[in-house]
Image 1 (spheres, rainbow, N blue to C red):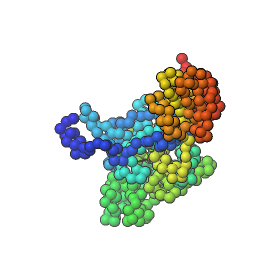
Image 2: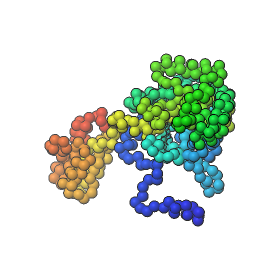
Image 3: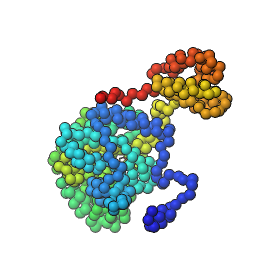
Image 4: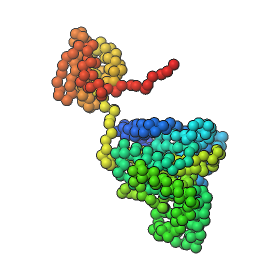
Length: 450
Ligand code: HAM
């Protein structure tokens, strides 16, 4: 460590026992059950729709985000974890993934593939946000992007898929889809000019933040929550009056396709999103109670981004959702997910000969899909049975010196408290009968092709 980094580190140095840094948290086993379930749903739905998974690096050159998300956005101005590496290159922990996916699309010449290219991701992201309920400094998103084709049916398809995933998770009724268009880049230029003209001379009524935004990012004045700013925003020029004929028709078609797919939405002319790369369609899934505060997901079209990032002009549309927020909603609604962590069998043994036989047996049981733990330490039988109780297993196997000698083993039904003696080499079949073939945890990654 250099003297300065040491000095900086000591400023925040803590003593054991340590806790997680502010705004980040452990994912404990009970929450992993939700993470796993959500991942499964996402993978299933997106694979069905022809999407392929992509992972980009956790950090990228800072410019990848600054250029795409926009210098004047909250994310780039305040929320990025940026650092210099040992050679002085500026790197940033990814705050979102559209920028990284587009960088990858260009770097790997994906425009040569059949278009559109459909990609999805399930990854952690980092924002130096003010921690509060549903807002963390490390959080997980799943997201999906369609790059390489321009059609309002694709925008509707993305919204439909996002809603379908919510349906699978049992939470779709909790959200209202907010829909808007922010027009083409050209429409936006005209609209921003009109907005600035409207706000010039009214600066004194704006909050400090909006005074600053007026030059840097005037669209964000529309969704400021400050009371005076809200009143001014109500009377501000409307984007709809600055849309070109093409943009108006495009938006009309998106709505028509959504109606065809029976997706309900609310038109929200003030919805602008917090990232600069969007064009035309933008949308968010708002909590029906909390509104924008705890949106679980959002997205839109970004037809200018590939070119901004140095590729050929290529249209694209996408969506991302926050996994912690989804889990919080599922828990609030008391939605449970199947627990795969339950154990089927506990194996208790006494004596070295018994232990030897158990080692092999445990492996064979696991191979058949019986989830098994063994007490292979030196505890007394009483202690081992107590442990079996703690693990909440339905069955315990007991193998002592007598059973080894007689070639048998005891199956104890933990709920009934009853025991039966079976032949040692028939015990696996007996257990599978009791647990049920359908409940076995079989390992099946698919076949390797040589
Ligand atoms: P975003 O609206 O910035 O969009 O983030 C999407 C979702 O990530 C949010 O709705 C929220 O659920 C979750 N999220 C964001 N920040 C936090 C945080 N600090 N703590 C917990 N959850 C958070 C994007 O990231 C765009 N890349 C979406 C997109 C994909 N647009 C086109 N394609």
